[in-house]
Length: 99
Image (tube, helix red, strand yellow):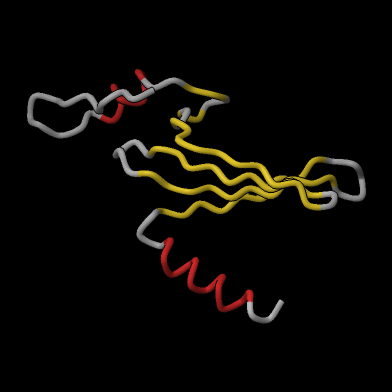
């Protein structure tokens, strides 16, 4: 975690080396978790996690977890970078008025 991209001799990122050096979980690079919060609401659990992207910027993942009628665990996720966050929060504030 916290690894910097490997630079090739021409100054561009060598993605193959970067991916080979990154820690993995089930074939996907592990992202550094900056902050996390869990919210239990009825039969559902929500996870709000801020993670660090490979370029160093932070992004938000919101995950909803629940069991379906067959008892299988279902997870739905959305991912949002911080430049989209103000519009998203503004829309939530507007929607909140109708709840």
